Image (tube, rainbow, N blue to C red; front, top):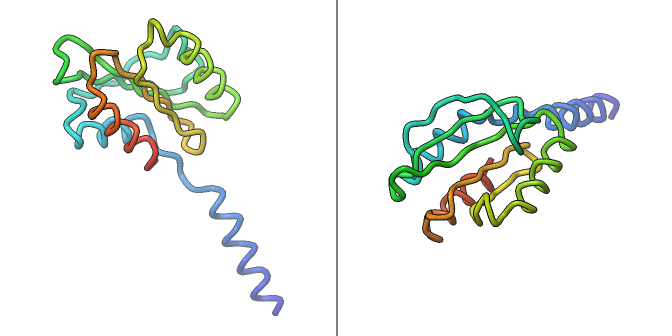
Length: 127
């Protein structure tokens, strides 16, 4: 009985320590959908300055336009950025998708189609 309790407690503790996906991981998944291309690391700044990692990608369906992936190291920073992006939706566009669990936020320019936006959302939801 004692072994079973220790085992279950250990499994529960380890499940809370699962590795969060990186911004690069998310970008590669976006590339795999065909929505994004040419992933590259860049320096977080502006609304996403609190991110610990940023990747940018081109939007092949909207020539000259891009998207970005921001990864945060804690929920407070993630929530602050997500709130700021929502407040700036007129400038940032409607394609904003976040995962509080993964601490990843994705934003793409407004020229992106709704269908491609749904693919971005599916990637983020799966993180």
